[in-house]
Image 1 (tube, rainbow, N blue to C red):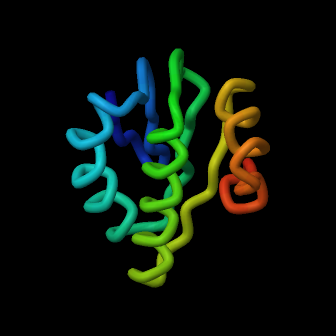
Image 2: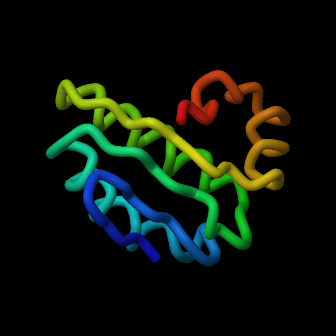
Length: 94
């Protein structure tokens, strides 16, 4: 699930391959409109598609001249980021 409150984009629940397509476009719209913090603290389950999703949103934000900070990365997502050597690209920034 994806919700926006103030400048905080909250990602929650399972972020896995069968959920990512429904999250992708909504997140792109949000991140292209203003500087946001992506709060991942309520994410329960991830697979590698969660990394692709976050990287896509970060690219979309940058392409629009916006910033996307990331907070609350769950350990499972940090482990995947380490495995795929993209930790510096999704590193929590707030």
